Image 1: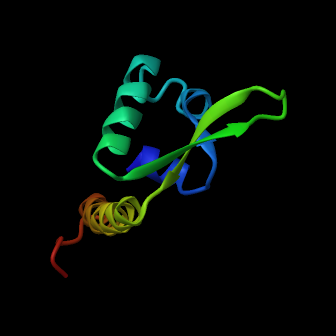
Image 2: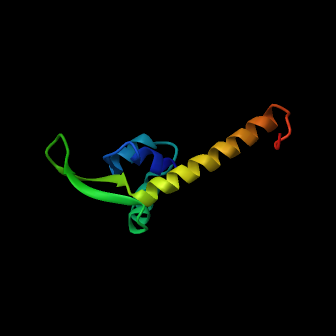
Amino acid sequence: MVVLALIARGGVSGVDLVDELDGLFPPGTIYPALARLERNGRLVATFRRASTGRKRKEYDLSGSGADDLAQASAEWSELRDAVDRVLEGLPIGT
């Protein structure tokens, strides 16, 4: 979900993700995740010129990637709300 949310910003490269997620995920996990998401049709990759003039592979969400992000975000919100209720000493289902 985190990778999809960052890519939803548009035109994100693997290097951008490694920099953004520094300390949260090991760098060696980002590129395999990108490859898997692209292979599964969740991402669309395009080669674009960076400000340095070099080509770089940038990712955008596909329609199914956007759907997955929306579903994961909704599930995360429900989980976060339930945890907040528990921490506040309230019943989860109320």
